[in-house]
Image 1: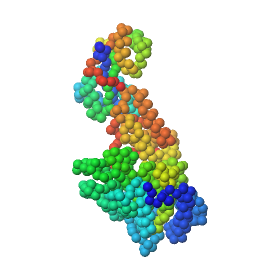
Image 2: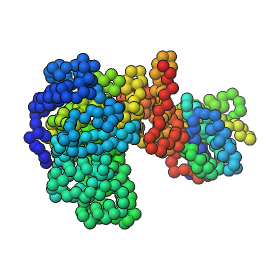
Image 3: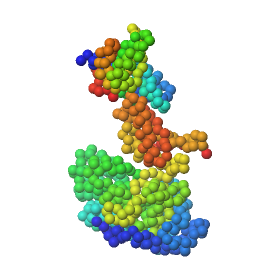
Image 4: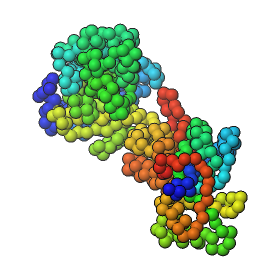
Length: 150
Length: 432
């Protein structure tokens, strides 16, 4: 199934909300020559979760967990967005009608166009629905899909 | 199995009557013959005639460890040199040493207390008891030695140290029980494994009588499983004579023989009795002690008491495992909170590690309690809602145990301080 090639492995890192934690992560990835393609921070008081799409997730995972960070892989998808009014509505409508819930999302401005990163409650069904309704999925190579996303 | 079935299973009302009679004669004796207690009672405005029911014990003044230290070496003793037959001296790790004197009756009561206790865990004259507590000024070795001999068991007076030889003796002399500290037994287990000896397979050991330092239910489970034994808690302090009480085969708290000691659990702040089943400071009056009388002695140990009749049939009250020291107690919005309660609650939540920090502050005249825990890597979810739910779950659990609201913060694993030995997990920033 070509659905699988659109499943992206995002790395998620638990981080205390204090100065220097992001710098420590970013420097570690630089040292490993890992490139960050997209990135977001969700914060909740004393802690936060850093989510990132990187070009070498396994290398990033190994490095960060070796430093004592709590890291996990999460499956997300990327949808290419038209840079015009109604672009987000189109994607949200398709998923809403298919009863697929968006858990969180952030955007990534790619070389050619903007990409909407989505964490949904049914990854594979979302890919199918978006493609069936004329949406275009972004292909972001992130190595083989993990056994099971959280 | 009972050592003295009539006494150990006597109806609770009869036991209370007996305790009252013993208390009454103790108070008269001390008022008449002890300068220390006479003065204490005068200062407290209480006369022996004021003790009319057992509950009147609370009219008597408390006694603290410092009272014993201040009367070094023997100022509180009420026995004559002719009556004294032995001294023990406590280690004095928390201050000046204290000296405990014994009359022949004191030694007899100590021995009988342990004979009852050892019988209650199923030991008999067929058993071989290896006593690996220190012999000497410390009460552990000699106390267990006489107790085990009294029930007719064969004693191996091994004392501490020379672990490899201890393991050989355990094997060759077919020891069925060992009395030592829990940490020494763990050490023995490790040494035995290095020697290629499996304690469950290659020895007859089936009982551990463990005490003289705090240990947990988790350690009990680990030792029972690993060493193939039943591990029993033993309690006592040198001031009370030495090790005196153990759990029975039900392993649900140690039986405090009511004819030897009157147990109270009091609020460490107010000195008032706590409600039944609530935690507080263990306070004991030794009803039959001649050389060094002990009345309402505040042990500084935090625990609770169960006065219900035990599954084993014994009617004497049970004191539960010691869970902390009064010195560690925090008062949050008027409620007593012990770090050990927090530790215990967290142990039952696998999603957070066993390390924690407690931060106490005062904001707008109100005490705040913050408990910081580490997220276990296996419990990490990328979704904020899951992590918030975990926090709420931990907070709910703490609330139900402590009866006071606690804020919870999640920390990265490995970031909270680790402690060698005595942990300093409390940061109290309140300024009064």
